[in-house]
Image (cartoon, rainbow over all chains, first blue to last red; front, side, top):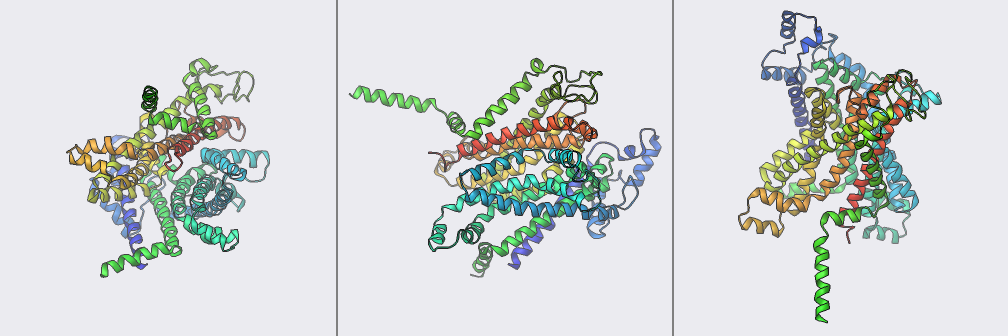
Length: 317
Length: 297
């Protein structure tokens, strides 16, 4: 088991490095002069050149890349924002809790309701409950997240006046963003859960469990779900990466000062240190959550444990 | 007697020769209620966007200063925006861009994915390991973020947006193809092709590909829908096609500032996007069932 965890952690580190490399490279080769964007069109060429010098963007690619890696991974320093002059780290630290809160809550909702609806539909295979749940899921998969968010603002804030339309404040400000961030994921998850449940529904061991006289709820929980879980776990992983990326847009819709809005405003202002740090944050956040999900699953599923102990045994022989 | 039997056989053979894989799949697909609805919906949307020149009551850029922010009425059935432009006409013309974006980005992503995936699956060993690890990293950055980054790097514009959207489709497609090829790799027909010294490219794309393409077709169909959504998202945050273009996401983005006062500006374009994506997803679901070997009788 330790071997499995170690292997996964190693993979995580490689992925983080590679992501950092990709982000840096894409931004490096982005046309457009950051200094020109910062100083405005009225700046003289000499001023722009001086600014480029000060930012260090006219150095060779490899030197800049090395610097970026050294600063980020050894000194844990993300640099200063080119636009505001404040350390990116401070800004991220202030905004991070909001994004993490929305992401993780949406993830929990996604898991809970996705599984619940999927099991409900799967165990009612091809009855009206199944068709209705799947039709609703299909509708939510098809709606763009940000449009649902906008429509919710119109309905719950403008027409009904129940919830504040945007900004931050008490917990009521987070209700709509969290729901919007999770809706699409719930639908995807419910569909996957349903089809996985249907796959195992007619297996012999389910019949055996039923013929033992076990209650249906126990059959579902003990026999169906663990066996149907593998494809669901994969969907949860991709679902989470969708939630994370979607949160950038959801934050924009609800004007929440999180990492997503920071990233988008940094992109518009060509504030590269801020862009790099926030995209890296999103990638790391996704990877860590996926790692945790995988590890949890490995603990639950005896087959993965067995796989690793078998590998070791084979090596010993 | 024998003549009639021969005749029967002949007609049977003709029947088999006439029906193609494509035709059979289509027939099976439209048996499902969902797929029927999907095809009908999509047909209506696509045809009305293509015939926008004849259907649209106004030009997408024509400004009517007597009717700014008009609520839906008999003259402007979806209302008008802040410059008095007819929303319905703009949706019709914008649909051309959105549909073309979705289709071409999905096609491009899938094509690249098929090539890389076939190479990984067919050659195996080190080539496969390297390609799959690269794909792991590629897909570890959330698709939308990657598209945002690429769109930033390339700048706005129709073709740049297609590239930015296609990038996210590649790794999924590579995984799908490679997974299918793994199942197929040790079949006899491949060995036969290899034994007569068939070129590798011919084996990969002429012999292997037709046997592994089904799930990719399903994925691509669904991909058109998700790409349309993503294109809308990109233009909503200001990274899509250039502003005067009435692409669906751009319509939403324009309306963003007026949502509190004029919700109809948001409602209709979003509704059309949702409807289109729904139609495509229904077709995708139908295709999946039609291509599923377990369900094929």
